[in-house]
Picture 1: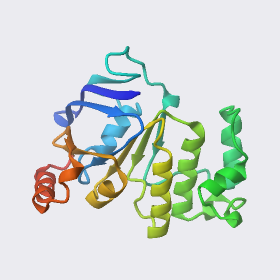
Picture 2: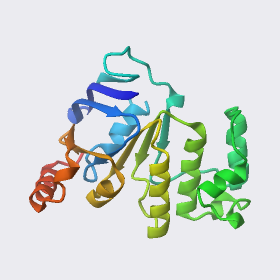
Picture 3: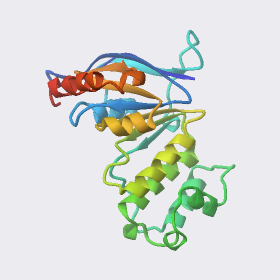
Length: 235
């Protein structure tokens, strides 16, 4: 499966945030969407998630190169944001149970099995979500997307503000979930992109540019990336 972006553009009045973006993302890989704060990473995700209207272009799925276009449906997309919003009046268990029932997920696993997978402590499972830590709320948000089994996973700076232990746990979850789907992970931190992602794509001046990870060991190459990011105007 491939996720194809063709001539995608997004303008806010006279300001161009995305400019004629062309790219093909492949199934089974985590793509690091690397760009400085204000580069347009969230705008890009909001366009894909249909949270904002695109100015021109298109995007779609296809099974293989040359195959017919497959329209992306809302259920095809999972979207994990850096600051999770959860119904704080519910417990973690109540939310997972409600989500499974509302979406009529017939092959759902026992709820505690999901909690075990996400390393959510037993003491937290029946606690109100308002009392969860930021990291635990982030895990719950990711868990809902895992249960939904989207074909395309958008991760918008999901490790922001997490402590080092929870961040490492989440990275392991992302790695374990990449098979059978396309995962795009946005970050402004090069080291995280190199550590976690199979491919790195630079969002620079409104366009996507692939980066060869094999060259990242070169100090000159890293300097080139940093200089490119420094030149970039905030959106």
